[in-house]
Amino acid sequence: MDSVRRMIHDLIDHDHKRVSLNFDQVIRIDSTGLGMLVEGAFYSVKPGGRLNLYKVPCLVHNILFTHRLLQACEIYSSEEEVIAAFEKSAAQSTTQA
Image (cartoon, rainbow, N blue to C red; front, side, top):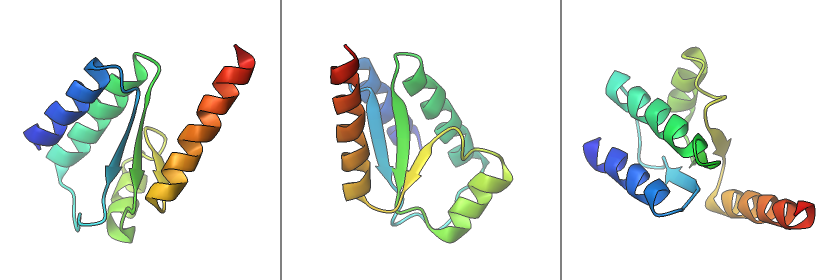
């Protein structure tokens, strides 16, 4: 978990405001993992970013729902959806500026 935490902090610190995590191989999540996600979500929001998850298995999704963490992260079914959401967000930011 520390490596994931460090990776999120490094990306945000180097001005990558949107971070996506692939949960395809995650079969369960414990309190340490939940804490890491909450910390990552809060850390990414400070500079105006967002933490996204994709390919989240049903069991993990249910745990996130139970602990009311779904509002902390956006969840997508595929990497393509995440990229499309990033592009849409970037286009909206450009037209508003």
